[in-house]
Amino acid sequence: MPARLIEDPLGIAVVFSDGTTAQFSFDALPCPDLARNLLAGLAELIHPHGNVDAANTIAHFQRAVRDMVIVLAGRGFTGGAADLRRPQVAGYWMGATVDLEACSRAMLRAYQAAGGTLDPGVAELAAGRAYNPQLFRRPLPPYGEAQWARLTEVCRSVTADSYRAHKAALGAAARGGDPKDAGPSGDNLRWLLVRSGPSRTEDVAAQVGASAGVVRQAGLLQAGRDLFPHLDVAIAYILLFGVYSGIVPDGIDGLLVTDVDWAGDSSILLSYVKGRTAAETLNLPRRAARLLEQWLDHSQLLRGFLPAGQRGQLWIRLSRPGHVTVAAGPVDRNSVRPWLARHEILDTDGRPLRLHRSRIRTTHAATRDTSSWRGSSRATVDPNHQAQVEGDHYLSATTPLQQQAVDAIIADAQHDLLRRAHPPTVLDADDAAGLARQYPQLIASLELANADLDNEVIAELAGGQRDVFTAACADQLSGLHGPKGKPCPARPWVCLLCPLAVFAPRHAGNLLRLKGFFSRQWQVMPAAQFMAIFGPYAQRVDEVLARYDPGVIAAAAGQVTGSDDELPLRPEEGTR
Image (cartoon, rainbow, N blue to C red):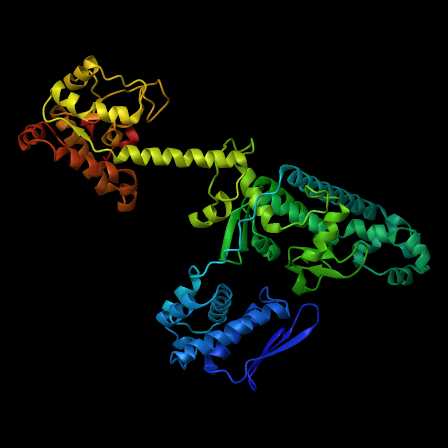
């Protein structure tokens, strides 16, 4: 087992992936039960269960264990992890360093995931945001267009060429025969490998009854390279799948064949595990689905020769071209660096690109919304993300065009908030004198070029010549809710929050009809949906009606029947 707890003296023994070993002692610590629980969580974080795979990294966790148990013991705590309570843990983390908090949080979460017991308040706190955020972590910027294009081009070329060679090799094997009888030709060797799987030169020579040199000269190495995908090919498939799908690297690495669910003849619903959250599903884009289908076909022959324990892994390959050692699962990142150098994928300084696979995901998100096939220049929110994650990781790492789009969206939202903040303009009577006193300064603050409030316009507003359903409009061509210079397309209730609206006593009837419409919508819509669509307008209509004389309201109420026929509604907006 890579990580093993030692009870006497308390400690942990570790075997790393490179075969080296280390042992860490936690003897003579106060709160031994808590220390033991934290070490149980640490064991779950060590490779292959987790990402911890170096002695220096475990030393950070060792300091965190010692600090947490010593500090809590100094405050009178004597129990284990199950006895911790939210105030105790919050007090410790608020006074800890970034590193100590991050390590102790990770161990508590891993301890609970492995079946350990935590108080619900402590579990919720451990899963939440850190008190001491890691300020050195910056969102990864997207790759430049030249780097992205070169990476995509090389991956496409490698996958297409290797798949073409694979299909040709299968065709050659179908034409061949048993090399023991027909001789060790290229087609005959392919025939043999299709039936026996990856084989060493010596073993094939023994089967054929020829020398190793003859078999090697006949093209055994090339036959194995063509028939079975090797590391170089698997890296190209994995990187290109990330380019096409935008799935997180740990989600791609952990894929199994059973995670691929065909939804019809051409669509794939892919299930994967995102290390920071949980299981997720994604309806793959067409290019990613076609690539995955190609990989399953490309690796099908090799998969048939694997042990049952490896056969379910999606990413299988030979460790080297033409060799017999089979690997399955994630590709070691140290293998990606020489792959980039061999294929001359360079950074802006002309050196081999230092590839970060999470930047592939970032670049996918940054480029998908500006590509012509999507038809939009604005960012779209990934359905697998929370809004906070989307903002932290992508809106802060944008291309120049995206930054302009984000700035425009923010400016529009701010202007909309300012417009809604203006108090309604309500006249006590239908008189131009009252409007002349109340309204011009508001129009001037909006800087509307078409809103030239001369005496004639004020008279039209007060007299009803500029009425719409809900109010009188100072300028229907202002462009506040539609194209500038075109009649305003806003729905009747939108006028309630528009700064160009002037409410006079003659509008009381229609305002009451709108209020009744809102009441009927409240009865047929979920509360959250109603508040999102009609909530601000329902509040404003009450605010406007409260400014009217009660006699005006009473007279107008006698003319309201309370049906949708009284309002200019579209068919889908009715409540009946």
